Amino acid sequence: MSLDHLDEKQQESLQKIRKRVIEAIGKNMDLYGVTLSTGHLYGLLFFADKPMTLDDMGREMEMSKTSMSTSMRTLLDLKMVNKVWTKGSRKDLYEVEFDWHQTFTDYFAIKWRKAVEMNLQVLRKAISEVDKLLMDEDASEAVKEALLRDRGKMKQAESYYKWLDRLIDAMEDEKIYELVPKEEDDKIKAEHKN
Image (cartoon, rainbow, N blue to C red; front, top):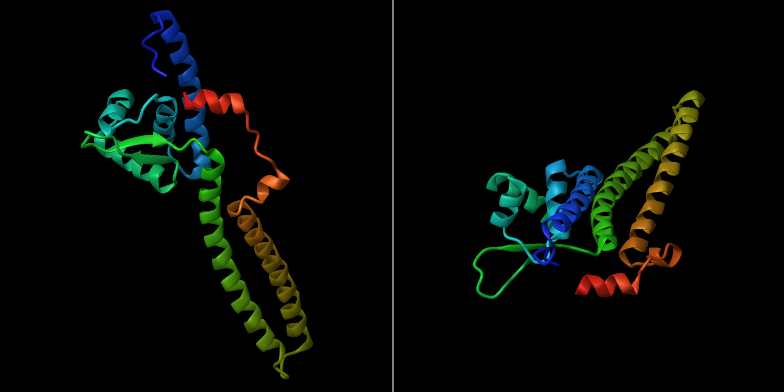
């Protein structure tokens, strides 16, 4: 919603509130591995009443076009903003992705899935190698004890990564919301659409 219909004092008050929220968003974006300035850019788009071009954002943020472009690419990769098309405009326009549940799921599922796959692959190979060493008849009891101890630790780690894989599946297929339901307010959804 545009602030043009508000008087100067009302605009100033609302801008002050928005600035505080944008600052908090910027500070918390490190959770996603995003810089403070990129977080501020996201906050600007969050309060925008219509999609913005890089030029629009650059004027508001007083950032160079290169920094703006890099930040926007980061936000697009994280699926936190969307590129939108508007009839008659040749410039790319961007708007924020308001489904923060989906943004969270997309980001963490991608990051965690990579970690899970890599760690499971390493653990399974290591366990296989330990199993081969355990079959060595010439291995001393002390060596076998150490191998069994290590194998137990690796199996425990493997169990954790299998659990994490199931958690990712629950996030991606939205079964997580059966356990931890989203808080949806129909009034807020209706206000957002206007």
